[in-house]
Length: 372
Image (cartoon, rainbow, N blue to C red; front, top):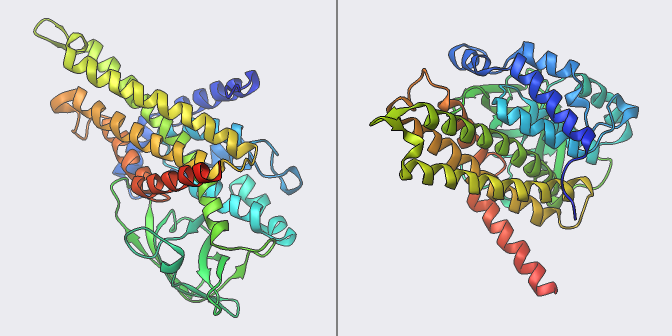
């Protein structure tokens, strides 16, 4: 089976990479880290003009109607650029939730503005530190209102719409759409390691909301949504891991010690080789993941867990070893190594920790073995 992208898809990659090199150089991320904003609104509008938010939205709702292969390519390039954007929150999660579980009226109401970037949406799942499970959900939806707190919520302070996991009075899992600009919704900023992506705690005290009720929603529906987002996040992690490796290699060739490039020393060679091996494994698993996602394969849960674990390991290793290869200057504010480390650490916990996805991977493998 050939998982490689088509010629047209490779052209999209080239176009996206060139666009982000021009409009999202490292100085763009640095400006957000140094400033008060939690994202670059000018870059967001430029990305919207490229139609990236509309990639997988059906044409009847103002989208491009493309596949998840194209979205994975965009995700990888956004990862390479460490773009300070709410793209994953709005596109991988909130938009996907509406496409999968919204009614025709809900899709017609929200998807067109999500496609143009005029509406930024996010997804609220966790309520406290630690792994989120069905039993840990305490936020309640009753009589059209939400009650409870969600934290951390990525991009909550800049979003206009949030898709929230809640439970009904009968203790049934619900996905609820809530507009955030209400007096009954309050937010408190939360500081994370990567503050080029803002996070907050959101309190709902009787906020008006409505269920996504196009199809029945269960906890399995939430897990399906997370599996789909995990594949796209893996591609984003792969992008940043590749750039971290490139930075380390370039520095190892240019930095001299004892009259020779440091890349000629065995210790540095081993670091770079280890990064390359993990990145190559992560890419292989990411291809498996996006194939399962695009084809809606029953192997998606296994493929998502595999891609997620490999991508976490590759991105963390590459970003850490990039700093180590740079030596004493690698951890300083003036160098760009920090961008990839910050984003890798953030994404390693987004959608669940590495241990969580390892457990899911083992469970799916055991199920597959027992069913054989």
